[in-house]
Image (cartoon, rainbow, N blue to C red; front, side, top):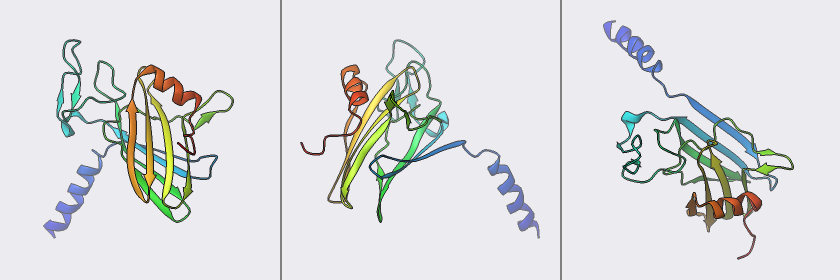
Length: 173
């Protein structure tokens, strides 16, 4: 009987410390479904150096984080899943912070933040513009023969501007 009380207590205790999660679901004009899951950044779950001083580079888990200025991130992307017909692919979201929030896919006539398409069940291209209003970065992914790879991730302003104007990757390179 004590075991049951212990399990109930622990379930209640740990449920109060669950990470807040923001889930955004949308359908691209090409018909591909996209789900972005972003969760609160909990510093104790990462190895963080710098990030608060202007003298040291901000490193999270030994890598430069995208979407972070001179402070700790508020959120990180836990996963992005794209779905087309009967296939789903998880896109590489390593080092993506303060990326999506609760924004919508697009502001018609102004900007769309995510684009791409699948040519068939095993070949796709996607681009995303991510930002928390202070630091913008862009990412491009390809799925080739069912294998996902991230091909671009940068905060370089010329590439960010290119992706903002051309959110859908070219169909043929």
